[in-house]
Length: 280
Image 1 (cartoon, rainbow, N blue to C red):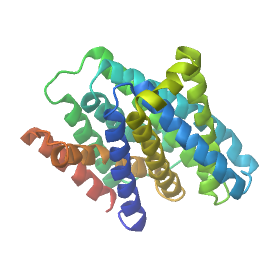
Image 2: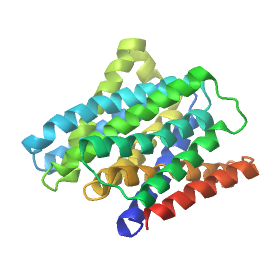
Image 3: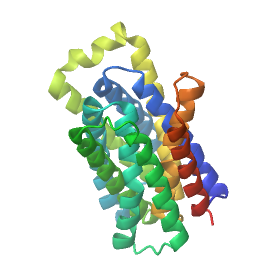
Image 4: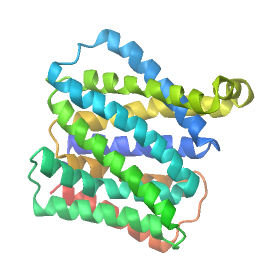
């Protein structure tokens, strides 16, 4: 697993941590997520002109996944309203590999060995330990973050099965699924109006540009994950991707000069050890 494919999934984890850092830098995360979604949808609308039409077997999965991704975006925004990024994000990402492993076993009939299970448990435990450090997370915040983790697990399992039904066309599957991100600006306009969407282009240009950049990075990050799930176990791929939390801690320490406690470093080592077990 930690060969060529595993290495690319780790790259996806770095990219994922990067676009979340961009999202964290913007105060209005609903607005930021909407502009991220617009950039993803625009790119996908162009790329579909150059890829094959999705095969019939893939349609139920990519449509379901498209709606689940929109639900995830809204759930993530809600979670960030209740908790800090450093609290909600690790709980959401840390809970998903276990749920993905269970879902893959139930719906995709994946058989995962004891070492893989141990690796998934280590990664999830380490990531959740990052979130619970200090004990400042409220019950409502935990519930919102876990709901976000559940949506992550749902779309990951759906995409894992869907890409295996796409006749070896992961790019086609990915860009058609991403077309559903057009629903995000529709929801934003319905809730806040057109002016609230377009005014920041003039008044908060830097925030809009960073959001658009974050959307472009996220395309690459999740595109790699979908490609990896063609042959890799969904739970293992998901767990490796969620090491993005560790990279986020490193980014915060190196570039944002954030203080990182010994407990937090130990949790990072637990996550890294889990990644090693996934490769055995």
